[in-house]
Image (cartoon, rainbow, N blue to C red):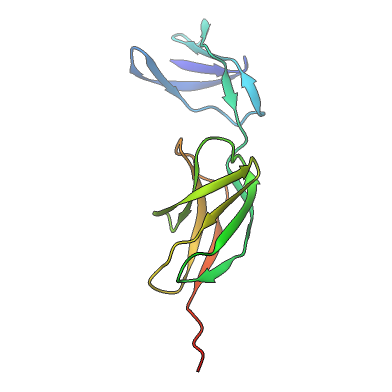
Amino acid sequence: LSCRFAGQFVVAAMFRSDSVVVCTPPVMEVGEVDLEVSNNGIDFVRAWPRLVVTPALDITDISPMHGFIRGGTVVTVDGTGFDAGDVSCVLDGTLHVSAVVESATRLTCTMPSLPSAHVAMFELQSSTGGTSLRSAEFGFDAEPVVS
């Protein structure tokens, strides 16, 4: 069982049910491509509709890179693939924060409050389960003490 993307990239497929075959596409150019399925690797049948390849979810910059543990810091994220459905910011792999998508290349997230200062791993996750190619670090700083 195999899938062929854009008439040239053949990958192994997994049978899940009479109506579901799972195959992982290779890295391809953004746009629409034909997806075909085969039982014997020779005779392929085209699936419909065409597969839409979107830019990979990626982070190129975050600003600012620090905020206070009380939360409320609005972080601007520049990157790609933000138009691929709902996107959330993920801290330390577990804490999901809603994102406001401004464009395909820019979004914002408001940082939550945390109990203590630390540097968190900052990633993005799409509603389809994809995570950003790169991560960043966001520092949660303790409140300054004025005496």
